[in-house]
Length: 305
Ligand code: AMP
Ligand code: ZN
Figure 1: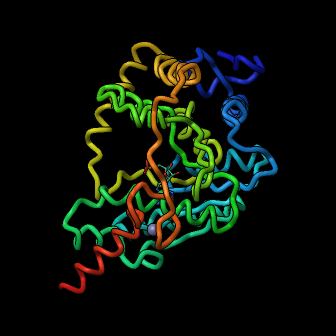
Figure 2 (figure 1 turned 90 degrees about the horizontal axis):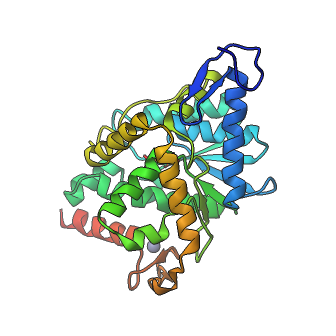
């Protein structure tokens, strides 16, 4: 079988979703084309913008950082070392080596230095699973970094099945507020840098193949602190649907976004947001944002012994 585009080279990748046999070079250009189309369609950012990519050391965010660089965007990586044993040190090495290999600046920050505690310490002191703080802290420090360097946009490596999993779970429970907010791009507002997910229509299989072709070494370990069992089960079911009928998940997600464009969401009252009195981060709470409240609670608990 020959590549659909050049008809000369032999096929290295078959994309069932598009019924498309591709050689290596045309896989890469097709991958880039779809990322660029997503960026343009959702008005995520332009070539003149300063783009921060939050890199975890996994295949998706590293693939995103290199793809954006190759597409001509100015990319700065950001990694938050959460201090997870058997995890963060490898991830940190991985992102640093990636930055050196591909000449992409990567800024590394340690949660313990900026927040005062590592994720494991927080979990021990608060006697709650680490996952209940992890997302909040990551979002907070990613945003803080992006603002500190005057970035125009902050990108994460969420892929099609991540987005479809969230959408499907929210539809099952009709979480209207979340459905209202789910979009591949969220505008800048009150202390928050614009956020974008340029891989919203790219699969993890594709980012893995791209990493292989480009020689990107990535970390392929599930987080040792979380089983993530529930969302993984939903994701596996969606993968099965896709397997039975290729293209289903792409249509599910694209359909949702175009449906949203047609609806008048004005009946949704946006919650009142104000800046945290301590750090200025936007919050719906009375005075302090969740990270500053967490910090206070931790120091109370520590001083009580
Ligand atoms: P996750 O929530 O772990 O599925 O990660 C989703 C996205 O968040 C990744 O694709 C990255 O863009 C970003 N991310 C996750 N962990 C980190 C980290 N430790 N430092 C910086 N960005 C991260
Ligand atoms: Zn705060």
